[in-house]
Amino acid sequence: MKISVALAAYKGELYIAQQMESILRQLGETDELIVSDDFPEGKTRGIVESIASKDRRVKYLEGQGKGVIKNFENALSVCNGDIIFLCDQDDVWMPDKVETVMKEFENGAQLVLHDALVTDAHLNVTNPSCFSIHGANLSFGKNLLRNTFVGCCMAFTKELLAETMPFPDGIAMHDWWIALVALKNKRKTVLIGKPLIKWRRHGENVTGGSTTAIQKIRWRLNMISALAKHK
Image (cartoon, rainbow, N blue to C red; front, side, top):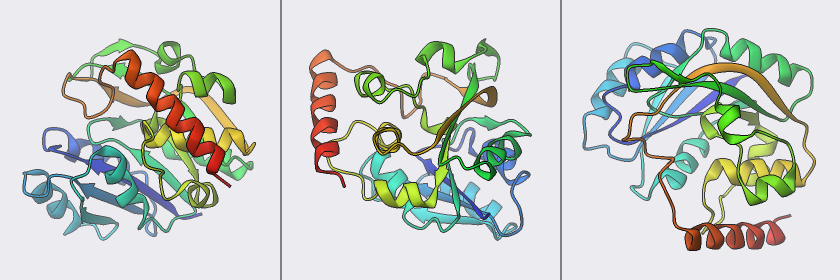
């Protein structure tokens, strides 16, 4: 099975080289790493293109400058692998991530979510389990109320990707939408309790910011509306 990794970047020059190195050493010769850069006039582009010049598996795309959801959608739109991994720019993959996750797909999984070590900017562990923070579960209803799927810990089949694209307008996050579609349609979803990345939280992350109660309510109403229209 061919693997595509969809990485959404935005001013990622501090950490993206380390992240890409941790990914590429686990990929096969026919796999691919797609980087969509939402700030192509910045320093990230040069770093990614330098790596791409030495490794044909890396593909650089200019983002549309429309935010993280559209940036991931841009990367995902050109992925042609059988299995797609979502990826943030500032984490580090554990050496056995790909092997561990792919075993679940070989056993029929359609969506996989794994645990992560939560770290600070210097990769010092601040919490040994992302699952303990988010309360990861496979309940459609519970995840509609509170998303427990973290994109950088997710991988899924190309068939599930086709079910979820294009992303509807007004949804809160792409990972939440993908998870809800999978759970609603009863696609085989697997939780791996082993941490397979170092999830770097450094205060300048593009995702994970605070939101108001009104915004949270609006997001859920938008999600319910999108799911009702979804076939």
